[in-house]
Length: 235
Image 1: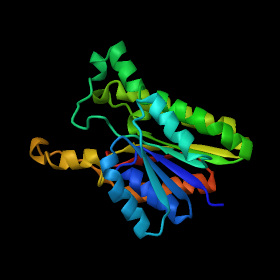
Image 2: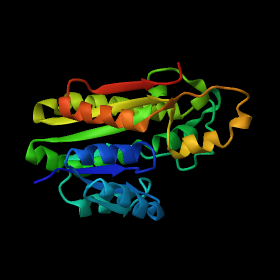
Image 3: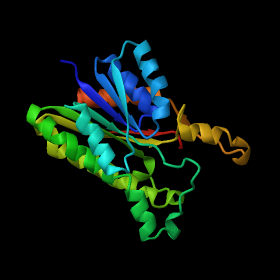
Image 4: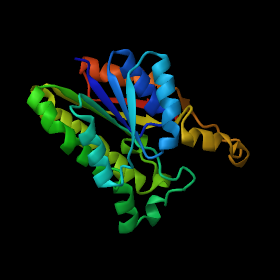
């Protein structure tokens, strides 16, 4: 039987690149995102490559909907967790102005990841195999004061992934993190920034090819020789 990969936060950038990459390896793909209007186009693109795929609408901040969508999928072999920003136009509060509500809002991106793991891990442990992949920000390892509370959630998600890997490796389950610094081409934030280049005062913003990151995601899962890959287009 073919493996099933669930892509949580399926978007036009990295999410779809991951879907295509794992689909080319024979995985059935399930797309989860909060915007079902995009799903027909995504599914058509995957079908054009001969990839079996379905899609479900679920916002990671709606716990009941998220868990119901995962339950409806059935056995899950791999999860990629990479939901995008709810509002790409929103500017984060600098770390010197961050308060407890700011931190709680930032951490709201981590709590669904824990729910996802809680939903799929029992089945993986029963079958003796599986993969958990997370996408986080470079601020988890490089101080970026302007990102404020987002640095807290990036660091927490990274540490969660690395610690899961340490706990699960001997059980046949891989966990790893893609630590990303830069604009991901074709993504919503990339499109927003490119539309506002006149406001950037000549600042050069490094970009990353999502297909390259997706290739690395597959290598992490398949080879299991490291728990993290760092991408830094900001240096």
